[in-house]
Length: 223
Length: 94
Image (cartoon, rainbow over all chains, first blue to last red; front, side, top):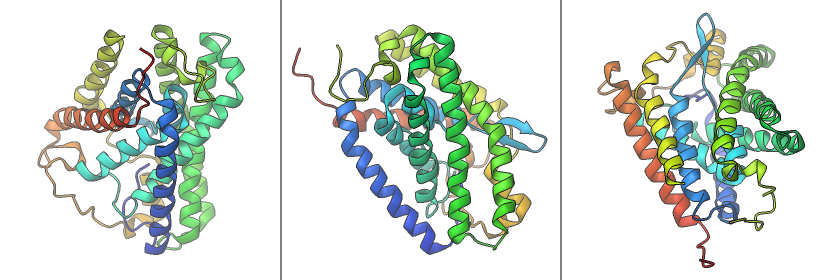
């Protein structure tokens, strides 16, 4: 879901660079409370895993593919603030080192995947947390649903940005229909990957799953 | 604890270094959308499209996707671990 430069006009690109900078700055401040000697290495590994899995485009239709965005995955494992930073680091490295995702578009890409995606995944996961605490099946279902919603809502971010100031003046309904249709399918993949990953971590190290720690209040650190 | 972290890093290396060769080359959902609607005509060339590791290759050669993946894993791990380690609350309750 990495957009190139030029798809959004310059003013809108700049607005979203500012939105992304403010959001990431806020996350940097809030993330401190969730990071300690144990969770900091975990967060680094979550960012690394998201980078790796984003390389794997899976087919969804003939001629179309999708890849993990990782917002819900990160939020469930390391919390929303650290999670947003994980996805941001991935997007910055992809844009600078691999020419994947434009530079003026980086603000919009961070807004969609790191901020909107992670926030959405977190809100859904927290709303369903009581099911996640009931066992592996519940956790898998919650991970799947929050990842699915994160994908579709992150895709909506692009639709909104295009509506505000997209190049080419294509009818927004057409853009929305394609984005939602394709990302509903991609969301299934995102859901499956997230469910498998989260339940795998939970079966080995449940203490490293943020969602299972009752850790929405940052100071309740158990050690 | 260390075993889990090493295992997790190893899985990422394996995915980026080996599984990446099996990734679909078709456009992703957003690319497909902008291609089908003609929005893609307005896309600008990436300023770094000629750089060494552009498009997860080495000098444009896809044979080295796995190598680019491993490099990416190392870079993301170093940057994120560094950032999170600096940001963390120091545990003085040892």
